Length: 268
Image (cartoon, rainbow, N blue to C red):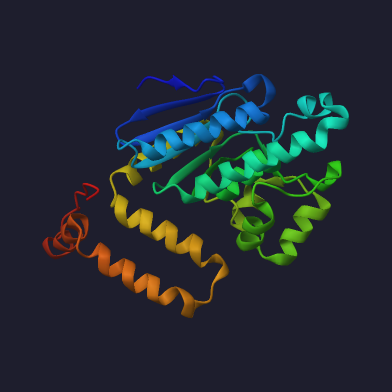
């Protein structure tokens, strides 16, 4: 497995047995995000989206922290030009969060240390499955510096935890422990700190062996259903299941049930 760097070199991409590994690679800044960094991250996501080797995605951050949010020092350096800079930065941030949700492959996110702001907290909320270390912490933090949630967090956080709890998190800015994040549904599993990368990689590898067409369709149905009524989604559900039933993976899955064996999916 060989890393390939994006032009910015703060995002690394590698492929291993169906898993596309995307690494935020600026540990000296706690993977603090700025415009070039976000552009590279988006390029990386489009690379794995367009690569036929991608059956699952593993998102990680190098160093002590997954992602501490925006690069505050870079923001301060912009002075009076900060509003224009943040207009561009938050646009890229939103595009990246949307890309995570709209990737056809399931996205597993591994969190160690801090996950803060739109980059950290927001990307966690935009991932499909989140594995967190027991000492990791989660902070939205936008209103603490006189700003507002971004990276889609004003929608995704409310959907995950409910309106009242989202208001509390957004207005009071508590630093959530991994256990609290698990109880709220922000993360999927909490594991020992030294097991985060291993557990996340194992889960991504497991998903990479699954029915990729069904996973892609399921992600689309779930995300599309966030703002819809049940009645609005029923026709799309019916159409999607019907289409999937004609795939080789569906036939293999049904045969495996009848034959009492594990299925072998090929993504077709």
